[in-house]
Image 1 (tube, rainbow, N blue to C red):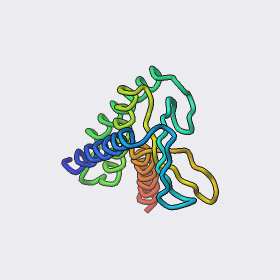
Image 2: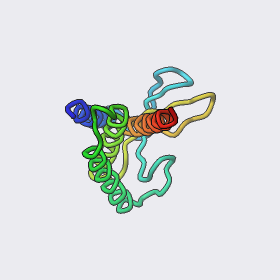
Image 3: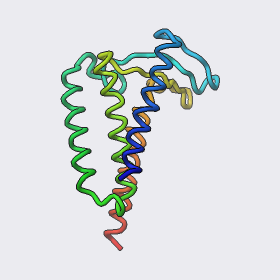
Length: 154
């Protein structure tokens, strides 16, 4: 349980520190190349969800995020974290990411994004640490589900 709480806390802390650094040292639209044609720090704000969908629907995001947070907390309390370590880590990352972006929506009514990547020439939508934690957590959940299905067949 302590490891799961640490993952949630670290995710939120790293997310909020990086966003704070971006807001204090950059102007919206500023872009700093880290690896040319691949990785940039670009200060962007998003009043919607992934890829900018549902712009300005803050009440919707507040309600959905609170439901997600509540569901994950209940789910985490019901699983055996010693036996289901991968699922526990996945849920911790999702919870930390959800809370990180929720904090932005409460404070700024937008989410602060700054990781700007070009993958095979495609300018991927700008994202942040919380988004990364959410995606990694979802990927780990998918892997855990596949492993569970494989265990069920053996």
